[in-house]
Image (cartoon, rainbow, N blue to C red; front, top):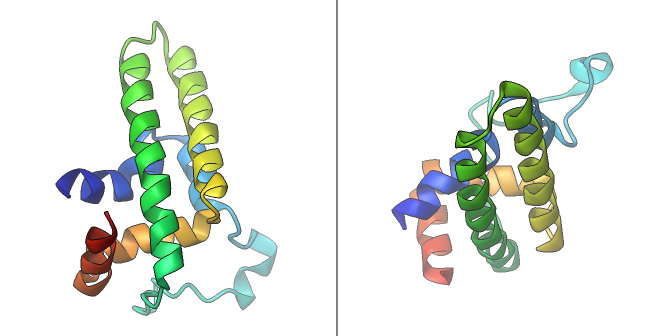
Length: 131
């Protein structure tokens, strides 16, 4: 369970840099439409009303994310240069995005569930029960 907790919040950001920003900002507004965007997290209103189907998809995606993270962390640590490490980060991020989308989730929903898992005991309990 602790592994899920750690990897759920860190999976996409774990490989740091631009790729993490890409995954986390999918579906986020651009600078031009910031004035109409309300960030629920910034206002203290995190979404927590996920249905069981979404949570099952999250658990399914998380399994693939863990595998990718484990595979690429070793490759990145062994990279011969910063450029090679960044290329590996991009590759891993692309694979993570594919795993999430193949599970039937979009990136914002995956990230919202991961955030709720870490901050809302009710969501954590529901996800843990599905594992």
